[in-house]
Image: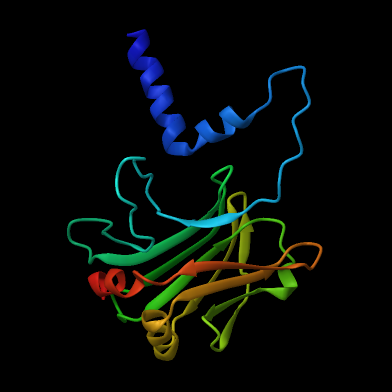
Length: 189
């Protein structure tokens, strides 16, 4: 019974990304070395096995609130800090069941310069301004309908750039690869 409990705790730690944080902590009594500047990387929305081939970045999901309700489908991509696994940016594009139009929900980290908002840009194309609508303990959120030209650019583009400012008004740009966006989006439209 004790082994099963320890395995459950270990599995939960792996799923929640705690293993890297626990392993990186310095022993008690010693000062931890200064942390290098965090690097964000695009990561699959699901935990991946170290021996498995890399999962696609954009993941398609469909769900319904009940058996009789229509399916709500979305594609999602995240960027996390390499060292800690902390979520930096999440972009979720869903197709509403009533209008069949794509709508983006963007989750950003806390500690933003809120009046500056955020921006989405595909490659070096036209940027789209996002007004940050609300913040809670998991982050700040903005959403917007995806115009047909933006959707076409995402389907053909290489990088979706999510830009915002921190509290010091330093610009931060997080690139999300679009290489597998079109096939994932085709699954939900």
